[in-house]
Structure formats: C-alpha cells, structure tokens
Amino acid sequence: NTLWVCQNNTGGRGGAPIVGQTALRSFDLKSGAAKGTYPFPSNGGVCNDMAIAADGTVYATESFANRVHRLRPGATALDLWSTDQRFGGIDGIAILADGAVYVNTFFGGELFRIPVSPDGSAGTIAKIETSMPLSRPDGLRSVGPRTLLQAEGQGRVTELTIDGNRANVRVLKDGLSGATGVTLVADTAFVLVERAKAVAVPYRPQ
Image (cartoon, rainbow, N blue to C red; front, side):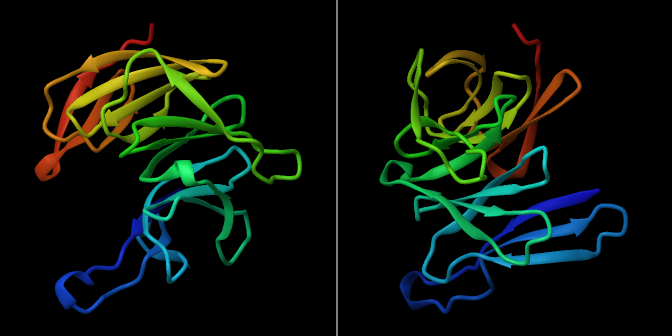
C-alpha cells in the first residue's frame, strides 16, 4: 500500500537556480497522502530507480554519483550501501530470488550483481556477462526467480535470464523510441517511451 517515487531538483545549468530537493519519497496508495521524504546527499547525482526487498528494505540508485542507497524498515534516513567506479551512469535496479541486488549502467551498458551479506551489508560486486551487448540499459524489473525485464534507451525491451555470472538476453521488442521504463502486469509488459507514452508488449517467459 505504498508508492515509492524518485524526486529530483531542477536547474543548475547555465546559471539557473537550483529548485527543489533530490529525495526518495513515499505515498499512501489509498489516500495519496505523503508518508516520508528521504533526502539524497547534497553533493550527489539524481535519484533514478528503486527496488524493494522481501524484508521491506528499499534500495535506490543515484545516477551520476555511482551509488546505491538503502532505506531500512523503520529508518528515518538513507544510508550509503554500495559504491563503485564501475557504476558510472547507474540506472535500473531489481532484486531476484537469490536475494542479490542487480543494477545496470546506462552509459557503460553493463549489468552487475551486488550480494547482500548476512549482516545486510553489500557483498563483493560481480559483473554479469551478457549474451549480446546492452543498448543504453535503463528501467529494470524482476519478473521471475532468475529473470529480469529491461527497457533500453536505444529502443529495445529485453528479457535477461541470469545463470551464474552470465545473462542470456532475449529481445522482446525493438524499434521503440527511447524506452526508459518497463513493468509487467499479468502477461503484458508496459514500456514507457519518449513523450510519456506507454507501449504494451505481450510477454511470455521462455
């Protein structure tokens, strides 16, 4: 019953004043009332995407700052959970049945797994090799124990099936205009594309 949202400030280019606040926010789905605001570091990038673990922990990516933040249940502030120089352009984030956190990088076109240690800290980061190059990977969602759906900025929607440190990539739809986000409802993947339009893509897992 909670909607999680990334909020980002605007301005800063060409001397324009910076307005607003970069934060992870939560809202009550029934009433629409604001529940919580969790600011990002003032010297950081932008809040991009989030994923929720089974225990209620929220993980959020910070693009242009190479970081993943964590909000534990009952916490009043984010804490820095994982950072790595390879995370340049970090974007989508999802959690699979192995309990690990998976993130992609928009500029590098890479996919990484971050294990969650027993004490909750981030484990050793592993790069996931892909069966074909990723094309500006963006939105990422888990749709099965080992399966992710991904929106790619060059106009594709892909299915990623994880097998160890390798991912088999299957193209579900190509030729879209700047796909940025994807979510699965029943057997349809709804894809957000440029100009805030949504495209429905039938989905059948392999």
